Image (cartoon, rainbow, N blue to C red; front, side, top):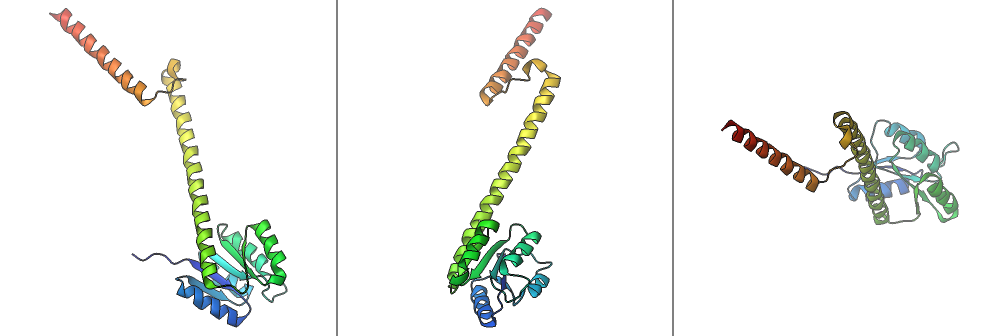
Length: 193
């Protein structure tokens, strides 16, 4: 069974940069969806599940920046890891995006292994968040089950409703019931003789 490739959307208005990053990410076993503008990008991923989006901050379009495209993509997938690519002169905007929208950023020029490293760290973060959410849901389910059982116990034996038995107490309770049953049986057998 082959492992699923991570899918990354790559958007940059410079065709040379687009091709270079596309080839580098494909060589690193990513499924790459490449677009040179926001409209094409949104159309290409309309019914696709993305893991990552690597977006140029300045897409060369007056109506949408990489940050705005990232926000639009997050409406479709709130766990999407968005990475904004920028030059040094625009780093202020990338840092603001990181703070405001939990986006990551990379300063151009960068190496493909830096992108791979960032996606691996981000994936670990997502996995931890998912695991924590699963634990919270399981705890909530267990709390509901405890409440349900407590309510049931109150209905059956109100005098024991506040008692929570541990495993030792449960074993002792079983032994006492067994001893009571044997004693009762012995009494009945003795009176029958």
